[in-house]
Amino acid sequence: MSDGTNPMRWNCAIRGCFNQLRRPKIEHFAACFPGRIAMSDIDATVEVNGHFVFLEMKGHQGDIPRGQRIYFERLTRLSARISLLILCGDAETMQCEAIRWIYNGQLSDWQPATFEDVVGLLNKFANWAQVQGAAA
Image 1: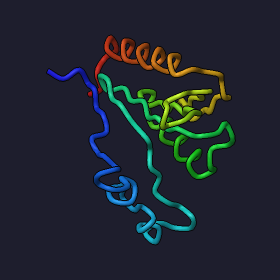
Image 2: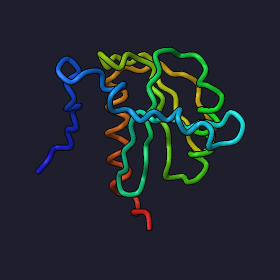
Image 3: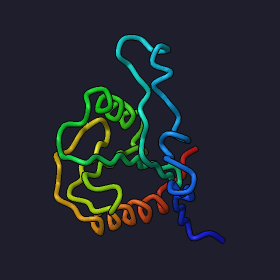
Image 4: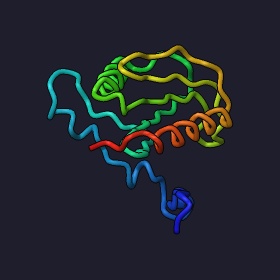
């Protein structure tokens, strides 16, 4: 039985840059959509009992790019079961400086947070979601 650990199994030193070799080149689909609409990638997502958290990591506490913000706001308006957590930090060290949420289309302000705070929030989400009714 797995404990849920999902480490990256790609060794860049041996196999080359993961982003160059395995990340889908979503920019190739740009001509498929009107205007400046483009596909967005999301860094991580989890579902617990029909409730979803999408995670996006940023290296700064600045504004989210306009198109991505609109996408996230509209995504979270689809259902009260969807929220999005934005982390400001360093993806290599997983140090976290701040977070903000998007829920029901509303973007919160940046709030100071450590990695341990984020772990606590995600644990709280998982515990809460487990006792909620599952999605049909």
